[in-house]
Image (cartoon, rainbow over all chains, first blue to last red):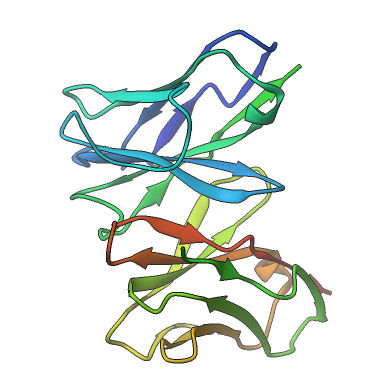
Length: 114
Length: 112
């Protein structure tokens, strides 16, 4: 069974640009959660989608948004990129509404802002 | 606001030793507490999950304990091996808002 797949693995952007990251959950999983990991702040919850609806949201500005498609694949978008957005972005999928359900993580997208 | 702290930030021990990683949290209203492992450039792998009503969980050489009253959890690793080298994170899931709060992790290096 394939695990959680995140694309691309690495991305370099400049300030002011926007970026879209993709996450394909494990087959049959309906929940996708997104996290940002930086050396300074550690791992922080961004948002969770379940059955195409945003179920929960962390404390991030509106520049961070996401969506989930009918096949449970999810995308995360960051607009007007800032240097501080450089991070490893992880997604995790679960069968039911996470994170009370066991979550399975992808290997992340490393985003670098120049 | 929940704060999860892991001390030390880094730890090096010789192979074969037993070791304990510490995690403390400020708000005891947790649904569960989970320990993860993260290898360089990789995502997180769940190691052990302790529900708020439980005191400990065991898997192989790993044992995690939870003491909500003191706001502490420990991860005990027996007979450490070089393959145990990784960053270990603990995370608490809060009852009130279903949000998971992570510690910043302990980077463990097992010396061959």
